[in-house]
Length: 531
Image (cartoon, rainbow, N blue to C red; front, side):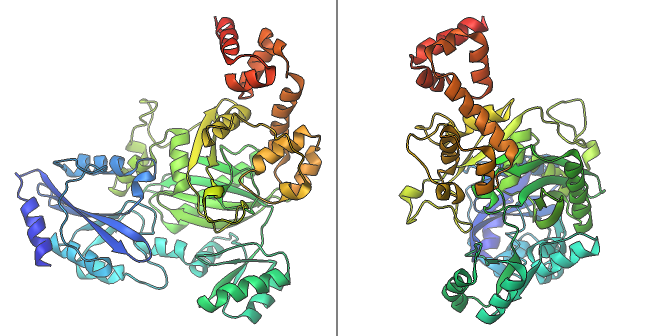
């Protein structure tokens, strides 16, 4: 403890009105390293402990924007800028976990805690590895932004379900089981989707369930059996709220794949393309009701499962703070979520924050998108330990890409080209495929769809196999039909065809490939027509 105090005291010897900063990497299990940044503002006598996860800076580079805001409002001055977050290189000896937080707060004489990322760092689940409530009371500290109780509710399935029932909303039915017999009985009632933190999956029959449970139950104290919502649409809304109850919806997103895959592994489109006006506004209203009821301050991601046949929906979960979806939303809309969130937790409201994009309006308006943004997962299963290239719900992604276009087809083909240098677009394979290949989600299925359409599969047949919405399948078909009809050298001589190709997202290399001419000739034709 003395080492930490000495380190901080050495660093806080600064002139009146300036601020000292120190940092320390702390390891907490199971979250991995977390970073505590201690900020003491001498002029305002305001002390702050900034807490975020070790990979926090990946969320739309949110580390720097939030530190900029803290500097603006706490008059923070950092020397050295030796790390990627612009912090000093001083690393005091601070122990991990519960004791580490205590020592940090004690060393700076108490203060406020700002959790810059999504709820994980506070680790306030049922197990209570870190007793933050006791720490806050002992050191007269408080959490800026979303109350800790609200974060706890979103992490606890039972509490979250009850909270949603209180406002008349539905959460997918589930049961907690502790034995094989209970699991089988629950599965028969729910049509099951077993899930725990390490493994999850859809079960088609009793034998599959028993096989899975025999492999994981010995290591688990409990297991969730969810009602299967397989083949439902997954829709997400990114919502921002300030402490004065002003709310805006930054963007909504839609997964191309139905609910057999996690969002991380599906192609995601923003804004949604297949919802009716009634469906869009219904889920938008519900997402605002949810964030208000939970008392969340800042940003959150509300996820829905939607049955397109009946417009029935369930609230799947709420992610408090910055998440993977927040990163995509911020980049797709240009709305600086991390920057705005940092201001909101410090007490400002959306109406008084200016919109840096328009420079004429405030930040209390929903962004309007006249383009399409698409996120595609980067998977390289051949280099992993996977025996198969089948995408499972418990896998981890290897990164993602995002593309923007004025049409879905344009953004879609651009995104595919960014996944790998050898991919030119939505190109069909030369080999023959089977129905089973289309049913099974793999890292190649998007190209199998191209192949199926090229080989004459109907949209209805592909829909029955994949449950991908017909709107997307029609867009895919328009790309393939252009390939079939315009695979000749005269394409570049026709200005209308060349314009259509570019609107469908075809690159110069792609056009040259299907027209059987040189890429430079395609480029020259485009430049000629542009002039």
